[in-house]
Image (cartoon, rainbow, N blue to C red; front, side, top):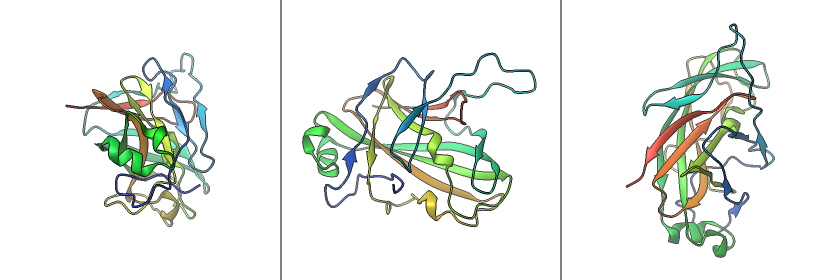
Length: 205
């Protein structure tokens, strides 16, 4: 499945709302989103981590980055992850973006821009899976992931085009979700596999 980027500028209603809004009490059972299969798997909450394995996750300040490891094709890569911003659209834009406008009634599109920096490990040769750990929440509920969104929005890159990604290089990938209109807080969650999510909060006016 192509990577999901912002659908705020789609010219035709070709995207599909893949996940219904799911009630979730905070971010304790956040999950990684499989961009290749369009499915979402629940992250396993770790019990008490050993002293040699510090706990991951937690609330992040705006502009604060997290560090985590991801199993990529060539081997394990350490990334610096920073949720830069969230663009929230209108109900009219959401209705135009999805295949069935009824799916977007009372909802808007939220596109998160996340910057990933390769900090350690082998260079990537066939794209990246680092974005699989990203989800978007609104007022404590997981949004509905938008599949088939355009990949040509300004500032957004396709993770499957990130070839020859070497240490020190950065890329910005975007995730578009459908959230309730009028949400007062949007959160970007990112976690390592089986790890607790790092959470960036973006209050809405």
